[in-house]
Amino acid sequence: MHCGPQGIARYLGCICAAQHCIPRCPEVCLLFPGHLFFLSPSVNACVDVVLSGVKLLEALGLEPSDGKNHAVLNSRQDLREAFSHFMERGAAAERFFSDAEVFQDIARTASEHPAAQLYVGGNAALIGQKLATNPDLKILLCGPVGPKLHELLDDNVVVPPESMQERDEFHLILEYQAGEQWGQVRAPAANRFIFSHDLSNGALNMLEVFVSSLDEFQPDLVVLSGLHMMEGQSKEMRHRRLMEAVASISDIPTDIPIHLELASMTDQDFMSNIMHQVFPLVNSIGLNEQELLFLTQSASGPHASLASWSGIPDVGVVSDILFWILKEHGKTAERASDLTRIHFHTLAYHILATVDGHWGNQAAAVAAGARAAGTQACATDTIDTSKVFLKAPLEFLTSHTEAPAKISLDPDKPVVQWHREGISFHFSPVLVCKDPVRTVGLGDAISAEGLLYSEAYPQ
Image (cartoon, rainbow, N blue to C red; front, top):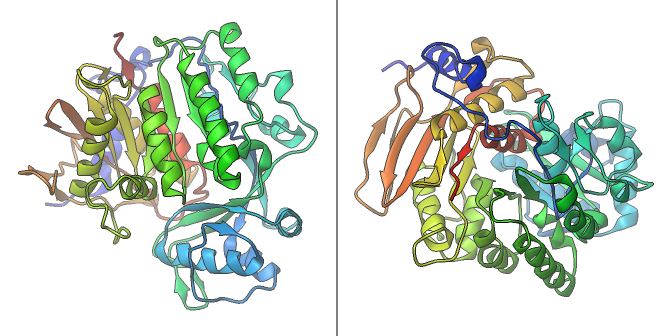
């Protein structure tokens, strides 16, 4: 079977808002037609300094070295080894840089590099910025917003005065392209390595602003992100602020859907705490393949013995872990949990897993997320089939822990669906950009677009 990008591009291009539907398009209704309340209690907003990782390391005088994973970066040597480690795997990662003075020197070199570009950064601000492109939505962003970030934000993003600060928080985004080499390391796929010395976001400094803003803004949706930034804090501070965040989330009215966007983490105990204490309070989560594997390893879930992904994550393995999360931490008749939706995104494909009876429009939502990945990476308004290729498996099994179904991809109707014990799975291939303009923020754009096209059923 020939399965090129043309048929898939036609299908993804057909996903549209209900009021502008093309005949025979999948019917789509925007979930939040009025004011959209966007908020990050973990105040994950910053300025991203984006440039080639190899160019920065060369500018710092660092020679190529063997890769080594570091949970925290304490020196330039750690940076060199960690970048090599993840570049060799083509994997995204994010780390805290502990030495403030050394980080400031590196950040200065990065921001002054002629190839550097400055963008809105942080999961919270990125999702808000993406949603703000819809003229009918208003976004409230609570986070440490300095003068440069405020200048970069869309006019539809409202920043409370209490969130303004004199200095910006900078995150360094070291990008690399597929096939790019640094010494003996060759990247199998385009991706990025992120690091920062960000104390404002990690300490949840805007938590109280978040709580006080709810009544005034009257949100239709709350999006939470940035809990991973707390890993830069001491365990005592992390535990205390997580408990305060849990208390604040518990105060959000139950008729407001809450989405939690995860990011790269290294502390399994902290990840386990988030699973047990935060997951039951949110309706939806978004995550990528690194975060999904780390999550199941942290809680000894299915396929936890898998050390890392080999190439494209196996669909059956991913499906098993998503099923386990919703069965163990999601809403059931016996469990007081609100979690009913998971949006999984990886380079080659996306899966939207939902508990039956709580969400609609899933086929359009997962396809809209896939379309956003292809257009944003290539910086095009629509998918240009000359600039993308298909990397998703043409056939796959839906599970490795129960009797699976075998599914073959149809390019003319590429979104496929299967069911398992009251949980629905919707799969969409992604048309991968051959020469991505920018990789950072893709996951946030995907989650934002998927949320916009999801229909939450009143409970």
